[in-house]
Length: 174
Image (cartoon, rainbow, N blue to C red; front, side):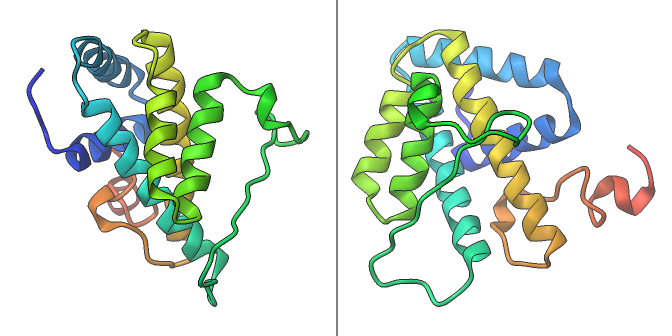
């Protein structure tokens, strides 16, 4: 696998996921799984970049004043957003991903890194798919919220294809 900067890969994955290009997502995740199975760390770096971006956007969404000692929490819901679920009802990969985000939100950086390690501990494609699907969808949702509310967001993530100011909105198609 050719090494690319984790932010470049994260931006690419957000873009193809947002476009609904499932084939490209699966291909990239298969490469990341193989790289991780060979001892590589690229998946970890990408997830860390996405978790950092998510934490930044969630703090923006919460609005100032930001506490000196943050104490953020998250409410988990099912896929239809109609039922709250306990974190223990989720898979180990999702549980660790949520905990990584919470740790980063609350400025516990070492704990966030540890949770990313747990999330990606298993070298299977299924584990990679589960972690990345959730983190990417959370990122896309946060980006859409920031764009809709004209709030700052990490510019390194690029514009969403579905954004009114993005490529589709400007040309009306893509």
